[in-house]
Length: 291
Image (cartoon, rainbow, N blue to C red):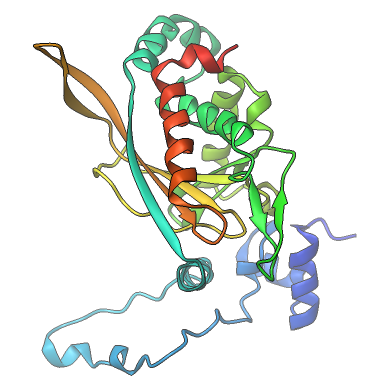
């Protein structure tokens, strides 16, 4: 029996493509294999006229070439297909983080004692999980023919992780049943193993919705691409200090920019506005999601 870790779908593709999975794993020096590692099937070619890309750039000055990894090529093909096929809209909002910041400060000694980082993202994951319970149409997928909405009884949150070998999306399972400390532990574990490329293929599928968090890098807003078969994705950028007027008095308030892209075939603008309103209310008063 092979000791190579690979999902049934990866093994099936390897068999179909005539790839010796064990030999390929030895060639790469790995024990965990995904479909992007098979190395024999090219990503789907773009449709339409792409002749305008066929340019001799060196005619205009010096250039160098950097081949895209197989992992990056597969991701590019999937993103291109998703953006071409899904009529997506992005709803922008902001969440007041004063209460979250205050609670994080109060829990800091306990976080240090537990050896955990209670980041703002932990609260955002918890809030999103509870929103998906409150709005089941967001916790769903469309059938392949687009005629049936498949409502899920579980809530799994995908976390997009930027790694040296490309974007990975490990999944926190049953996030709606977990407390802040459990979510913090799962988040730290998945992020560390994603960076070390030790995430198993079955840990990256089945998300209800994905979070793409750029808060540690920067930006004020962006339009994340829906990751099918999910119906929506939540983008987060760097928290900013916004002046909010309390009567005649200006007050500095930390606000997190939130960007919700959604599949307009199944969800509409009113759905998105209600969903985001509930999400921002949970973050403005995190006690509501700790009950």
